[in-house]
Each structure stands twice: as structure tokens, then as C-alpha cells.
Length: 407
Image (cartoon, rainbow, N blue to C red; front, side):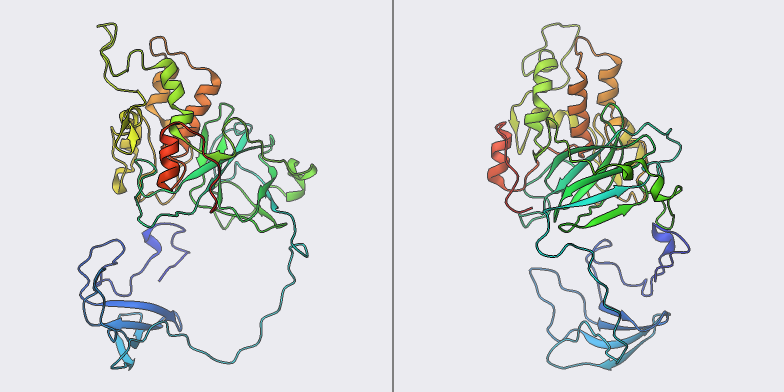
């Protein structure tokens, strides 16, 4: 049972009806009995499928008649309604006559429509805490690619684990009042990052959205409370008094991201004279990291040297690791329910960026190079932007790869 009046996120709002049975997705593989396909009849009674036998994991198979149909109440009491001796009973759906709901007219254009949609952000500062207005200058739009290989972490995208490939599509401007209005490609899973004047992400959207051709949608703010309304009426948003902005691709937009293409040239230019495969030329500067593009496993020595100092898997995604790592990120299966604004797990929290900004021998990066490094870290420090092994091999060689066929 979920009670949104208790909490909007996290476990506090959840009451488990059957706490004696572990969640197979998260709490272990020893499941002595199990439920499936619940259908609520009310807040106190549910139709469920239930098996008194242990759950069998792949490549094995559960008995075909394992599941029977039961009535379950809110206290965990169970009563058998029907069980077939030959085949299991799943996905019960009670049927009763009811009035036909009203048919709403579509807001989409007739016919095929354009291959774009329009999005409006009313106020990016709603949900960003005490950040001063005017601090956010742009939204970066990132496209996430559906995974086209069948194993969760193989081939790997980066050290965070179990990731999707992705591409920066570009940026759109944010008005001084925090509003934005822009067009995006239709039928593409996208997310947004709120960027400061230096191109660093103050907040990253960790889910995706999309539009249909010709669709117009709007949101209130950036990680604002989902029950809130705009602080100012929509008609006062500056972005609504102009045409929607097209996406500006910039130097990194329009193709899958690649560490070797975007980040490695910066390391080659500024770092490998001291952090190369050979001993450092000055004994006073001992070599501690190999930042060359030499392949090592699925990645390069440079990528591993920058990212392998901390493990962010699951509970490893925590403030301590984020503060100590050269390159922080969100690890797979992490338990961060509400993303804190401020970029703790991105470039703004990166010890590598802080080291370079403070001054590190002769390494003097341009603003464009800082933006490239920040874009990489804020994309969760991925190495590849693509899923298919052949495309990854091209990126490892430093070649550009076009947008994948399946998007």
C-alpha cells in the first residue's frame, strides 16, 4: 500500500501487505512462496495469484500449475478462490458494467504532423532550493538510447554499470525569470540538465520524457514538489512571449557521446607529459596516473585511472564517495530517492575539476575544455555513448559514430 500523504518518495509511504516474503528484485533469491499480479478490489481486499511453492529462477522453470487465484486482505489473510490442476491462474481482472468514460478530443495536429514537439518550462528555480535567480543559463537536452543488447551490464557503457547509451542533442536558453520554451524531436526519450554559465549541471533529470509529433507539453519547475503549482501565472513567463527556441547542437551535439573523442584530446594536450606510460620527466613530479589512451579491457587506462578510485555501485552512491572521488557519478541500483541540487554527483562536485581550477602545474584549460570535461562527468562519466559492440569498437579507436538506427 502506498500513502502519498506520508511521503512523496522513499519507503516511509509504503506498507507491505506480505512482509514475510522477500522482494525477488531486491532482497534475495530464496523465495519460499510468492505472489503475482495483484488487483485491488478496495484498500483492504485484493485479488492475487499465489504459489505455496518456492520461486524457481532462470534457467529453470516454475511448475505450470503453481499459481492459484486468491482473495488477500490488508492483514495478509488469504482465501483460495480457484485453482486449476493443470495450469496456473494469473492476471485476474474483474469485469463489471460501468458507464463509458467521455471521449476527449485529441490535441495533436491532424495527419502525420511535424517530427517535433514543443516543451515549456515555467520556472526552473522551483525545486532548486536557494540558488539565486539568473544562475541557470541553459538547459542541456540529452537523448537516451534504448538498450539493444540483452545483458544489463554488457557490453559496458561506463563504470557506473547497467547504463544506456546517450547523446547530447544540444542546449536551449533559459530566460532570466527561469522560463524556457523550445522544440524537441518527437518520439525520442530525453532528459534535461540545468546548466550554469560555465556549462556545469546544477541539477540533472534522472528520468526521461518525450513528445508525440506536434504535441505541446509544459512542466512547472526542476524537481519541484509534484503537488505544487507555478509561483507565477504562466502568461508572465518570458519564454511564452517569444517563439520556441530550436536546439543549438554546439560542438558536442547530435551524435553519441564518446570519451575518447571528447575527453582524451584534453588529456593528451595537458596531462600525459607527466601522466604518461613512461616515467615522468621531472622526479619532483612523480607519476601517479596513466592518462594515455592505451586500451585496457573495454576502456582505456585514462578512463580507469580517473574513475576507478571509488565504486558507486548500489550503496556506494553516497555523499562520502562523491566528495572523495575524482569523478563522482550515480552508480547502478543506487538508493538516492531525491536528487540533491547542486551537482554533488556531477562536475560541480568533482575533485578532478576542483584540482584543475585551483591550478595543477602547467595544465591550463580553456573554457571550452572545461565545458567538455563537465559535459562528460555530468553525463554520468560514461565511456561509450552506444550499445552495439561494433560501434563501441569504433569509438574506442576515436572515430565518430552516427546516431543509432534504433532510437
